[in-house]
Image 1 (cartoon, rainbow, N blue to C red):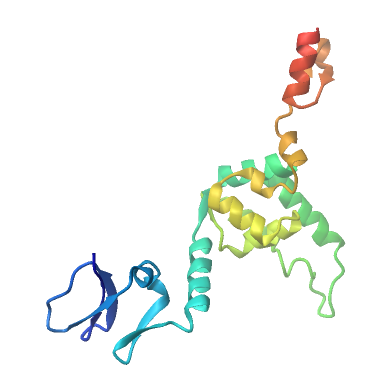
Image 2 (tube, rainbow, N blue to C red; image 1 turned 45 degrees about the vertical axis):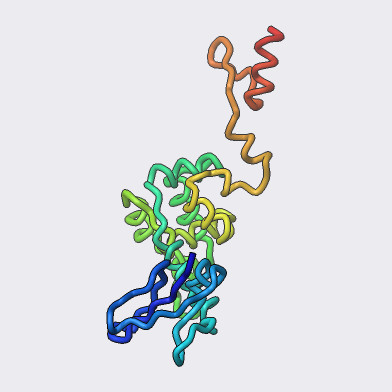
Length: 202
């Protein structure tokens, strides 16, 4: 089987194929399977294929664009935060308001924290149906809650709240099953396995 790089002299576009292009404006270059498989790393230059010296930076930029466009529904985000931190959107707004009220003001009399997170704007953002990873409020609130950039990226990539947890212990907390006795008294708040054993023992 043969592999080709095809350069269109009119559009200056580079493509790959497993057969030659017969159009007059196309230049066919036979290439190896290795180059064919890693074709995105190459550019056409002076009649031959060469490795793009800007490939890594361009690839990273494209990846950042892709990640920025990842989205989750508001319910998915609030559920994930609740499972990871036990907080909902109302709690987050309350946190921001409390911190802003305690944060010292700068020389211009402007609240330093409010410059980072505008409480009113945050309330509007939290009413959105979908949250995009590239929204700066995602990073701002994520930092407030102690999430790293990598954790937020992974959460928006998978929708798995466990990506927001720093340990297996935090994940296990979500498996809590509360057992109530007479009068609403809490008898047990351990994880599901412990609860199951208590039930069997009783």
